[in-house]
Image (cartoon, rainbow over all chains, first blue to last red; front, side, top):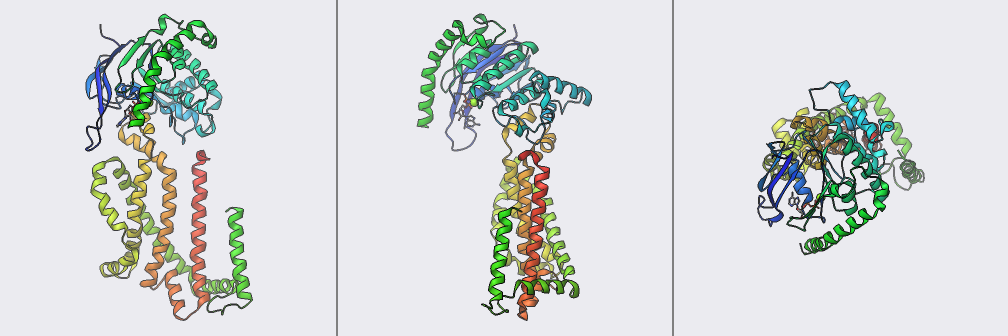
Amino acid sequence: MAHFLEIDRITKVFGTTSAGAAAINVIDGISMNIDEGEVVVFLGPSGCGKSTLMRMVGGLETPTTGRIVLEGREVKGPDRQKGMVFQSYSSFPWLKVLDNVRFGLRFRTDIDAAEKDRIARHYLRMVGLGDFEDYWVNRISGGMRQRVAIARTFAAGPDILLMDEPFGALDAQNREFLQLQLRDLCLKERKTVIFVTHDVEEAVFLADRIFVFSARPAKILEEIAIRDLLPAERDIKLRESETFFNLRNRILGLTRTQALRSEQMEVSQ
Amino acid sequence: MTLLGTASFVAVIALWWAVAALHLLPPQYLPSPAAVVSKFYVLLVKYNFIGDIGISIFRVWSAFLLSAAMAIPLGILMSSFPIVNGLSQSMIDFIRYLPVPALVPLTIIWLGIGESSKIALLWMGTFFQLVLLVADDARRVPREYIEIGLTTGAKPRQILRSIVLPAMLPSMVDNLRITLGWCWTYLIIAEIVAADSGIGYVIMSARRYVKTDEVMAGILAIGIIGLATDQAIRWLHRRWFVYLT
Ligand SMILES: Nc1ncnc2c1ncn2[C@@H]1O[C@H](COP(=O)(O)OP(=O)(O)O)[C@@H](O)[C@H]1O
Ligand SMILES: [Mg+2]
């Protein structure tokens, strides 16, 4: 049966095009299938190739070999179907909060301005920023800025949401709050999401499924079906439960050796 | 202007005034501030100094606008297309290291001593610098911004208009302001060498008769115009880009 998203024997080698630079083998033959409405987390040490794989799904990088097929069509480049949330520069400082969210709909010609407005305000309220429409994004906190980016991406109505460590620069409290809000939003909207992180607790809390990446060149070390182990609806108390704690410890053990390998690789580079 | 900025101005003028009042230097070397200001006034009312100031401003702004109108599109093209960059980079680097005064004889031979030779000189002095500054401004637009555009379905033109231009605008306005300052430097060179009007011409003719107060009145005029323009653009910068503060 065809899946919503099929990642089929992907490899990626950087540096072969520009003369002189040594080739870096980043992705070493990864395959996976993702179903509609799933929240999938790529977990792995820094520099292992998580972003690269996700960017290939978004059409922002091309695989060296292999195919990525989204809803039956091979991914050839970026478009509105695949929305992105970045860790930094995630919103435009020259636009106010509401205009940033509206930007997600700016280039659509199939709906009129009033409808765009309605959608933008709807998602701004969903992320709890209804009262901040008229703020410049530089005047709000980092956590609020990430919520603006999330609202913009949801408003754009993509088929799949790609989030590259969107909470990586936030403090712990803010991060927990945003994880909770995002998990909620994903359930309500039944969006397919790929979320990249190197934070184990974040991965466990958000995911329906986690793919644990090895150090570079990235392979899938293990696939963990969190949805079979934790309830779909998650709250703060879940973090203190024994199941959560045990899961976290097991995955931490799995990633620790990879993180070490990855670090040694960075130093020797 | 800040309090400190004003204070340093006042201090320099006070020192100047003191040196002149104590007759430490003959007035041919250093006329008093009062003498310079009164000369400035005489020039304005009796010698059509306003006309000279006007023609200088006209030359500066014509060249500046011409430079900007050409440098902004070419700079953006250089930043987005390696081929345009490759074709123009070394040529631009060669020309921009040529000292502007060395080009004066050439512009006179080619274009005579009319307005066009002066504007051409200022253009050569600023265009090749500005185009590289603009290309840098465009290259510094974060990749994320462009990718937000790509993943919301923007076409290249829309990315240019709705993302690249607004993102690079604050630093570009700063660079334009600095370039406008260079125009004044080069203008005086052009007017001192070959002109029969303009502030530089006034300064040069006054020098011939050692009318130091008149020379300094001319310099004062340039200083005032420069300061006023700079402050005006900074003010606009703060108004347009409130979101930066
Ligand atoms: N455009 C590129 N050119 C060359 N090397 C790259 C490029 N993008 C990423 N890399 C390299 O690929 C490796 C994986 O990067 P990335 O996917 O960003 O890792 P992660 O997101 O897991 O931290 C890193 O070693 C990085 O230096
Ligand atoms: Mg990354």
